[in-house]
Length: 446
Image 1 (tube, one colour):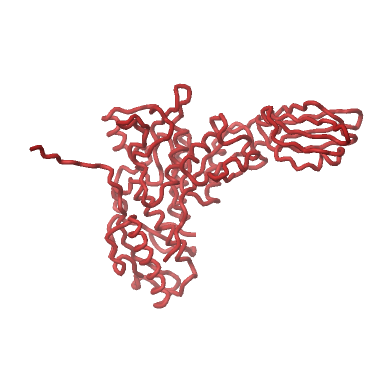
Image 2 (cartoon, helix red, strand yellow):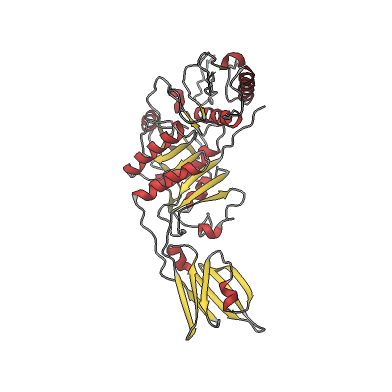
């Protein structure tokens, strides 16, 4: 438990507050986790699920996803786009209870019913065959899109087939099992997304650890709910996360505002919402010393919604992350910024840089990882231990070129004037290192 603070808190936790004014060997938290929602998808269980996909085995959960993450499907493609840069992607799949099914009647009181394991129209793409063997029993095949996904050999009878543990279907039946060349499942139906589908997704984000989440919709009510959620997660729940949304001028470090997209060919142009999934993966995959400014989009051949130079300048001023084509004709991110455009007393304009936010968020995560509630005594001995951890952490960050100008004793210490009882206050000074992204050369001719 944790978050930011403006005064005393009721619940135990590690509370971190950043100000842009500097005030007078630990473990490291992990980045690389993005989340995408498969809202409007055609395959889902009786309840919503958050399915983990790792980059080293993207199709390990093939049946639960319903198809390969690289399939030609506009919704599941969000996973593949995020996986281009993220180590792990969580796919949120809403519930879909209307399942495809097929019943074969062999004779009176002898029937076999096959039901898709999950609901949705994807189940209508499933076919089952039961082929009699020449020796005894049956071979049972489950085909998806006409391709064999599973095969069970030497299935003896109805009792045996109903006991099969298929990843795609459920078998039920009675009496004597017979052969059937093709059982085509039908009747699977999709659920029409509603506002609550999106709020359920936003609520589900609180139950996992991640860095960025795509919210690929321009529905104003959903975007407003997303802004409220990211503020709550960052300020009250100690979740150092960012949401990526299309065309939303949130003026918020927690919201990355994507305003255009890119294409791989004339017939393959991404929507801005789909581009948000790619950005979510890129931001999750960027560590505390990485900026995505001029990051290449592999295999993209053009920008969709390209801006003039004047348009690019206006977009930056408006807090938009957008794509351009560089001098070599490569599609790249123009400027790795979030939607913050109006500095405040606690956040100057450097906070719009996502590399700066990655550094600050990573440092906050590392503090929570290494200095936990009830780990140390709230006395001189405990203060010395916590100060030692914090100062080592600062030095580690400086060695990594994430921060600079560290003075350990002055930049991390317990404020003993406010610390008492079970409350311990720290003063931390930190100066993030940004990337050299605006290069000015003065050339003198002779």
